[in-house]
Length: 482
Image: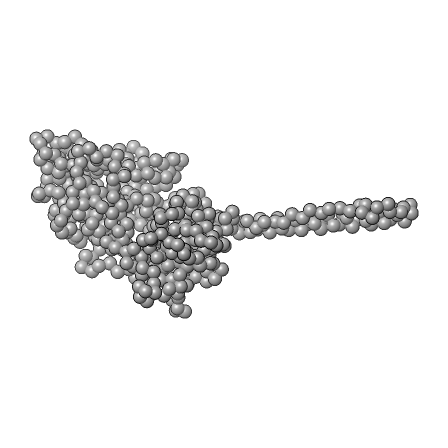
C-alpha cells in the first residue's frame, strides 16, 4: 500500500543548478507614476523589490491598461509609520476597468493583489464594494471580508493556469458603492511543475483516489504556515511568498517540541525544491520524540479555518532534520481525521537526511458544507521506534480550488459579474425612460384637459372664476443609475 501511495505522490523536478528567474515579473504600484529606475524613483516594497507606477509606461511596454484613463490616482498623505510605500497610493475606479498583461510565458502564474483601505480628504476606501476577475476566474466578490483598514494591509494570492499570451484583470464596482480600488498588483510566472497534475483525493469515507487535472485548476492561498518556525518574509522566499508561524493554529501539541536545524538542506533532483518551499521552512519543525522504552502516545493536530462550498488542496512539507541516522523515523499522517499516509518513511523516499519532500491531498467541502476547520495531524505508527523521533512536520499550505463556476467567492461566473454592471446601468436607463414617459403622459393629460375645457367654454360661455383653476402639479421622478 505504501509503495502504491508513493507512486501517486508528486515531486517537483526543477533543476537545482540555476535559481528560478521568472520570464514574466510585473510589479505594479497602482496609482503611482514613478518609473522603474532606481529606489529613489520607485516604490520599494518591504522585501526590497522595486514596484513601478502603473501609469509610468513606455509606448512599447507589454503592460497595457487603456481603461485606466477614467480612473483616479489617490495618495495617502498620512501613512502609518513603517508601512510599505506600495500602500501609500491607490488606483480608484468608479466603473469597470481592466489591466492587460502581455506574457512571455504560458503556464501557471502567480497573481497577487495588495489592498489597504486608507482614508483621504477625497475618499474613504473602506466603503468600496467591488468584484475582481482574473481572466475567466472570479477571485473576489465581497471586499469587506478582507478587513484591510488601519495598519493591516491584505494580500490575496492566486495561482492561475494560463493558456493565452496575456492575463486580463478586471475591477467591477458594485452598483451601490460605485467604488473599487487596488494598491499594488503582482503578475509573476511560476515554475510549470509547481502544481502537479495529480494529487490524492480523500473521500468522505477516508478512501484515497487520484484527483487528476489539478494543474488545470486555479488556486487561492488560504493558509501558508511555517511549522515550528518564525515568520518567513518574501525576501527569504524565491517566489516572494509569506509563511506565518503555526502557534495560533495548533489544536493539540502536548508532548511535542520545536526544532531548528542549523545544517544545510539537501535539495535534490526529483524532490522538493526551493520554489516549492524555502530553506527557512524546511530547517524548522515540530516533532514527536520517544525518550523512554515505549513509543509515546502523542498526536499533534493543527486546525485551519476554511469556508464551505469548495475543494481544498493541502500540501504538507516534510524534512527529517531530527533523526541521527536513516531508517529511524516512521509515522502516520492524518487529514480531517482520516489516515492519509500510513507509516511514512522519509528515508525510503529521499534516501537522505535533511532532504525535503512534500505530499498533496485534496478534500471536498462542497455540496452545502458550511465549512469550519480543516485538520492536519501527525502521530506515531506501528513501526515507530523507541528513543527516536516518531513524527515530524515542517510546513502546511491550504489552497482553495475554484468551484464549477470558476469562482473563489460565490456562485456567479465572470459573465454574470460583467453583466451585473451593464444590467445596473440598463436598469437606471429604464428608470429614466419610465420617468420621461410619465412626464409626457402627465403633460398630455393636462393639454387634453385644457382642450376639453376650451370646448366646454365655447358651448356654455363659461367665464373663469379663478385663473389657477385646473392647474396640475407634475412630480418628476429621476432614474438613478446604480
